[in-house]
Image 1 (cartoon, rainbow, N blue to C red):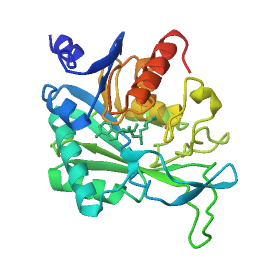
Image 2: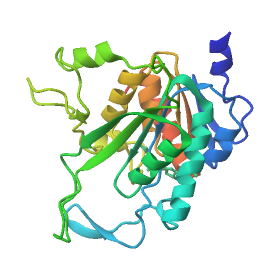
Image 3: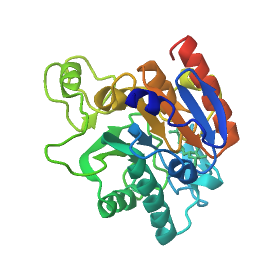
Length: 282
Ligand SMILES: C[S@@+](CC[C@H](N)C(=O)[O-])C[C@H]1O[C@@H](n2cnc3c(N)ncnc32)[C@H](O)[C@@H]1O
């Protein structure tokens, strides 16, 4: 019975733009959609919120200086307003997570400290701070500090319980790491004989055949996230779903998926990827 209710967690949500077998994409503001969902209905949330980085700066792309303009959604409104936004969506996510569920948030130094602080203020229980190493990171043009080549993933359960109630597929992760406990520094694929480190190149052309998103996450990263914290049949939610990478990994892992995204162009892109993934895995 519980499984049946969870299967339809998104039923009746306004603005369901696209759906397929075991997944739906809702277009609009994620906080509004989250507030319309039943409480404790989601097993795993992966969130890749705006970096708040598109504020007139420059970066290096294919050896050239280009402006950092990922879109209006990525602009900062100042640290106080940005922190209030993080607090609002994190609060809305916590309400829909099951006590056994977990939240993953990916971000860089521009947002991750505010997000981590908001999580502590709200009552999340931080489980890990994982470092994802990007071996193909852009060079640093200013030459005034080190090259940014990592992203942080915070992993947390909605509250601290005794005993701990969250799902962690410990044995699967240990097996993947050659029989040794997996660490919080990730590299995939790793050189033969070395322990698994979270080093994943940013997505290549094969993952962009259905269209482009400026901050698309690599599929292997999401595969690891779900392999460690989800089970087949679980409901996985992404409040900032973008090109739908979380959705592709979720359906390929036998999970159900609800993606929330403001921009209709990215809803279309995600739907194309989801449909293609169900026919022929990426
Ligand atoms: C960093 S990107 C996510 C990229 C995604 N992980 C992927 O692999 O494609 C953030 C996305 O959140 C969307 N967004 C920003 N603010 C939002 C909001 N309040 N509600 C829903 N979506 C939002 C943006 O349009 C953007 O596509």
